[in-house]
Image (cartoon, rainbow, N blue to C red; front, side):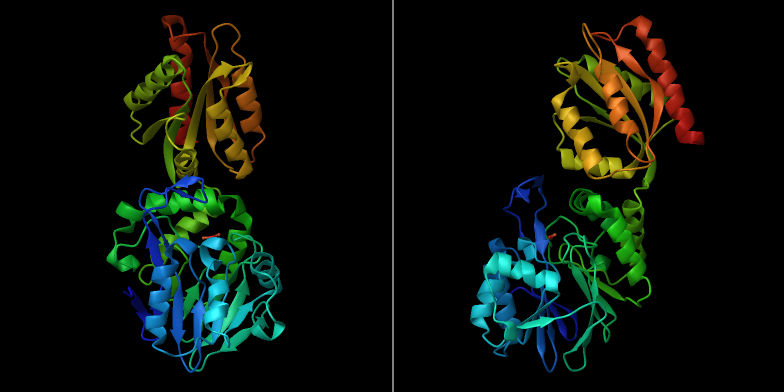
Length: 402
Ligand code: FEO
């Protein structure tokens, strides 16, 4: 049975949600599922904006055919060619033999790579600022390369002042009937998934996101229709402000995130002691994570949120403990910037990983490292408590006055 909602009088949401998928991109846990949004514009000509992942194609086709009610589909606008959105192109080409694909040259290069060659008479190639009239609706196309693949474009509906924004402004999380931002409690129910989605999927591409935000700031936009998560038609500044902060790699909150790796509980103990010292100094916003337990996508999202970070690790094979090294690798790969960090190392006979962590963090733009790193030899003892006291003082001072 079809399961659709009207976004405006002439635009219908025809997407679907997947609550079965365990790992998005076979990498990221999605306990709240994910939605794949797709939209149909009904005008003198009909247009579909992107398709969905193959896993929800049955629901998508029921939605599409119901919405078209026997009309032909004239255009498929392809804003993004990642398979979570383009999977149904092949079947659409078969079902609607007169349908034309609308995309840019990079789009069609990827169409060929995924689906084989499509006759040129079925391709409408657009470039920056080109328009396509459907009747009352005029669509204007803007390229948004690397938000999140090179071919990405966004489509602006001039009549509705509505932006089909591709992956931008999306979120993990299945839709529970409530499609619009004014039907949900974004901060309570969606923000952490929106942050985790941004940080891990788009987080590497801060500069392209900034370029896209600048380009779009010239447009009057009443509604944002992303490819995942809620549609924005209320207070757009909520999501725009978050995207601006995240893409500038500025922390959302002056807050602590303490990350530890611990084989037998001794490094964990040092971090717990430090966390209690911070709390006793009056700090309230403190989160502590075991990097071997909490998924790295959550750790990365917390680094996007927090201004102050502590990394504590045992020395392992003369290097950094693997789970911590994996986190440091991801931080560098995503190009994170502009944080204050401190390091605690542990080692029973040769504690050496602190210097290696400091070197890696020091190579990141805008990272300020509070030195010296604290060294724990096997377990925290009275004679090493003063070093933790000093670190707590440095961190608190930096949080309050830095
Ligand atoms: Fe939701 Fe980049 O695909």
